[in-house]
Amino acid sequence: MAARWAWGSAAAGGQRSKFLRQVSHYLIRYATWIPPLIWFNAYVAQVTFIRGPSMYPFLNPHYNDSLREDLCLVWKLYAQEGLRRGMVVVFRNPYDPNKTTVKRIVGLPGDVVRTKPPYPYEHAAVPEGHLWVEGDGDKSQDSNYYGPISARLVTGRVTHVVSPWERAGRVRWWEHPLRAGVHRAA
Amino acid sequence: MPSTTPILRRLLRPTRPRLSPQPRPPRPPPSSSSSTTTPPHTNTPPNGGATGTPAPSWVGHPLRLILTTLKFVAFTHLLWEYVISMAPASGPSMLPTFEVLGEWLLVSKLHRFGRGVAVGDVVAYNIPINDEVGVKRVLGLPGDYVLMETPADHHGADGGVGAGAGVGSQGGGGGSMIQVPKGHCWIVGDNLVASRDSRYFGPVPLALIRGKVIATVRPFSEFRWIDNALRKADSPDED
Image (cartoon, rainbow over all chains, first blue to last red):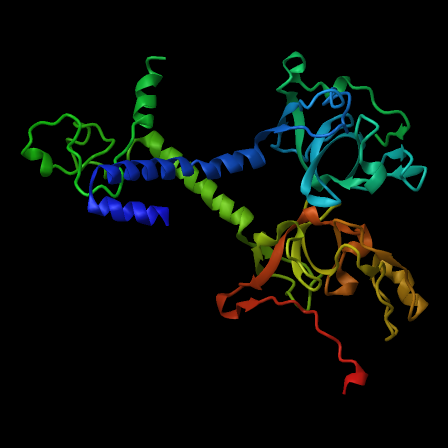
């Protein structure tokens, strides 16, 4: 509608129409960059804030005394390939497809995991194509609530911490100790 | 740095708005009289196309052409990923509805993540246990109660493959039911005996649903919409 109005006044001529023509021209030119940006964010990399205490103390260590949230780089290229125990992954929540969740991989397909309280059974075998994910902190809704998740839900890996300057840098997931109580398949 | 600056400057230079009524004179204005007759070149250098016919103005600088192509591809990808897409499908699992080979399906990506999907719709989904895409019918949404195994076959044939085989031998009324957990759906193929579906790998997260199958387009003469097959059962009391 606004474009039509701008078009009409541009046809009439005048100083204001020139201004409007330029503005609409630049708006359209910048708008053509939106699809590449969406593609990049969905398939290559994205910088996002981490919300909530589920990865405490690894991410958001000050969730109790500050409103500051960690800013992380999520690498999305080939996210579902080569998953290892200890990696911090981003996946779509199996309980709500519109939410994404950050957790650490605890068990791979074939592993037998000793579960934590809300889970109804003491041990859980991770089926093929699935992962057992848990948060580092206690306040975490993870596989102990909804069971093993399909690896197809994984959308990315947290590779770098960006925002709190003192902790910025690469996420060294391989240095994180593996959780006890996992009988590894291989 | 000095080598990249001219390219950057050329990139960032505003091109003429397409709806401008009169062409702007070319950059080195030779004289006022000849400026109206020369065709407008936006990005070709003034003496670049002196030998043959100059490149048309919409071609522009090669780098800009590459960028425009990339932007166009990204836009098409956006439509393909979030609005509508088409893909071939094969396999016997949806047999009365789709043929085994040579089906091409039109998938509405507006229904991804199970948005607006109802019981009875045919959906394309990421198979949770491997990295393939399947097409099945939704039989249960969050909160619904579904039969976990194949319904017992009263005609004496085997109840089905895999998980359903034991139930079929029990006779009518066997099997256990579960409530589909929140955020999940229950997906079963139309061809019960040759379908690997939720009876095998359990409820599927709605986040794995890629879209709703709205039509088959195999030869375009056999185009047909895929509608929701759920019908209200006639109850004998109503007559």
